[in-house]
Image 1 (spheres, one colour):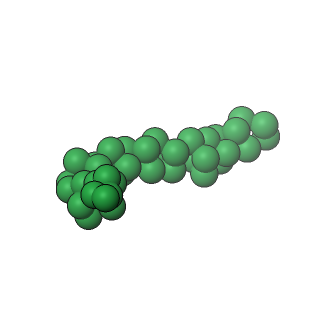
Image 2 (tube, one colour; image 1 turned 30 degrees about the horizontal axis):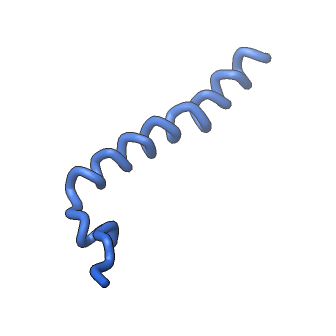
Length: 43
């Protein structure tokens, strides 16, 4: 019974974490700094 719950917990919490981490890396590669609004303001 415990192993079933542990497997369910891993599926529901263990898989989304690396997927979201990888998606952040992909988005940072695809978007330019101007689109991310990370460019320093010119005064």
